[in-house]
Each structure stands twice: as C-alpha cells, then as structure tokens.
Length: 450
Image 1 (cartoon, rainbow, N blue to C red):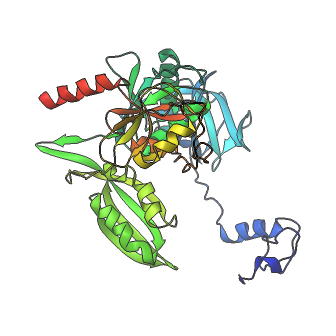
Image 2: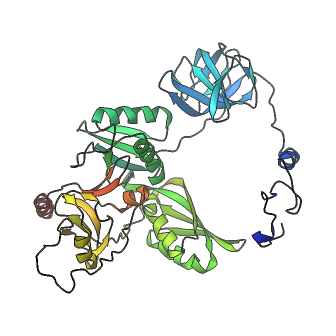
C-alpha cells in the first residue's frame, strides 16, 4: 500500500479492511471475500471413516480426549470405531462423547460430524498421538505422526528455601507430583522420571522454551518449586557420543549479520545458508541444542533487539566439542533479612544487583553478579550505624543503579550446576544449592580431592 504519515489518516478507526487505505469500510466483508477468493475450499475425501489423532486434551473429569481432523467419512457419538495402534494392532471401541470446537471452548454434539471438521473424541480405549480412528469394517491407518524425542532435562524439586510456602498455594511433593503426572497425559513430548528422592523429579522436554512454558503455567496456577540447570540429553552409538542438533534461523539487519555469525560459531554452529530477505539477511545455522542455551539474550543484545530468532530440532549428530561458557561469579547474601539501600550503595562497585532495596533475602540467595570470575558473599542487610554526631556526608542522596530483573528463561539459562531457580507465583529467585557458606567450602574441597 501507499506509505504515508499516520497523522494523515482520518481520526476514525484505521480502514484496514479494504483494498486501499483511502476507502473507509464499516465491516469485514472485504476480508471475508478475499479469503473465499484466494484460499481453496477443503478437499473432501470419499470413503469410510479416518481420523488421525494429532493432539491430546485432558479433563480431570473424563480423562484423555483425542483431538484430530476427520480426513474422510462421518462420526457420531455412540458409534463403534476401531483404533489403529503403533504396533499394527487395532482395538474396537465406541465413541462415548463427541465435541466440536466453538470459539475458545468445546461443545458436545449429538449430530454426525463430517469430513474436514476438527473434533475431540472421548473413547473407551487407550490411544496415543498418531493412532488412526477408523470404521470397524474398513480398517485403514493413515501414515503415523512422529513425536520428537526430548532433547533436554531439568531437575524439578520442592521448594526447601527459607521462604518456603510464603507465596505459593501448592508446595508439597504430592502436589507437584500430581501436577507433573497430569501434564504428561496431554503433553506428549514431555517425560517425567522419578529419582531416588520422593521430592525430586527429572523432567525431559523439547528445549528451554518447552520446559519454561510448563514452569510458567505451574507458577500461575499457584505452585511453588525449584528447578536446576538445564542439561542436554546425549546418546551413545558404538563408541561415539551423539548430541541433539537444531536448525537455527535468524533474520537480522545486514549490519549485524557478522556479529550473529560470530556468536553462533563460538557455540559450535555451522552456517548453512545466508540470503537477503527484503531489507534483512536470513541466516540458517546447524547448531547443538546446548549452544542454544542463553543464545536469545546474546543475539538480541548484539543486534540491539532487532533479530528474529527461531529454531527446530533436526537430528542427533556426533558431539561437536566443548563450548566455552563465560559467566562472572555471583554475589551471595550473607544473612537473611531485608536488603537496605545503604548496603547496596556501598557494594555497587562489586557488581550489578538483581534485587531492590527493601526486598526480603535469605542466606545463600544470589543477589547479583560479581565483576570478577569468583563468587563473593556480601552483607546486603547491614544498615548505617547511627550516632549523634552529624557528618558532612550524612544527608547525601543514595543513587542506585536499577536492579537487573531476569525473565524465567533468562534465569534458567543463567544458573550454574551448583545453583537453583526458586519459582513461586510472585517471585523468581536464584540461589545456591548449599545455602551455608561453610557447606559450600567443604563441598569445593571434596570435589578438588576427587
């Protein structure tokens, strides 16, 4: 269209549903006519019933519900159908309930649903993603959908910090265990494994984003728990170690392309393709999954926020060698209490802080990033000693650098092997696994002696 200053538009609603910005419209007829003109009508296949289960819904009342598009035929509640399984076997069952999608919800339907419709089916037998629901008389399976394997694992554990139970509604191991079991009923790319401790679980997912969506959903529901550092899942093939490789696509202004290439190559990424796309450059890399941990932040910083990043699983390939991970040490709270502006001001030259004045902190909590490579224990709760003698600097204003607030994903990417992210409905805190400084020193000596 014609690019003009926005102020030249009428003050009424922008006339976006028309073939020209100068033509004012009052409804969405033009949009609907354009859809009919350009988008072909669905092709209806003739023949007996076939539905491929493409996703799974879960209800606490009725259990698992199969969701898929009717490829051909008709389906009705109460109808006898066969479910074609992965191993080639089939099981005859009946449709207990049938739903179609209306708006944001599902609507139970008694009339037959025809080919082309996406529906949800409550079956009396077990099923998985990729199974085909067919007619009993003519059992023909559609080509199976392959569900990608998990590529990353994280340790989930109950919150055992000094602030346990202050902000969350569901905090016990039973609550978290039940919630994780409920999640795997419908989230097929997720796997949960019990550990030797009843308070810890290994959760396997399809990368940082997949796991962070689960974590964010749980904290919004009122759960309180902790997670450890994300770890990539390796495989052994004879004597060779294999690691998951992903295809990373970055669309970026041309002047920043060399910076993005440099960042990706340092993370063992190989440039596959570089081509112009409008006024930008499209870069495709083959990169290890472990190289993607923390890459969003690095690329967005280097490109002044202008990069568009996406990645998808490709395959397992031979291990590409170590990736240098530079991170400064951290500032660790010495005591439990309220952080004071006076203390933070005096410690500003030690690094940048993740907390604000008057935030409650506990011993062993990570409150900032050190300027050096080593960890440093600091007292952020120490107030100014009061005396009856006025000094010339007594009323100096305290000017603090604003605290650096991490998102959930940034916190998960930031922590080291000896640290945890504490997650509650209201807070995201970083902490050392061993809160006591003497315990940490003993553990360090033990590791050095091994």
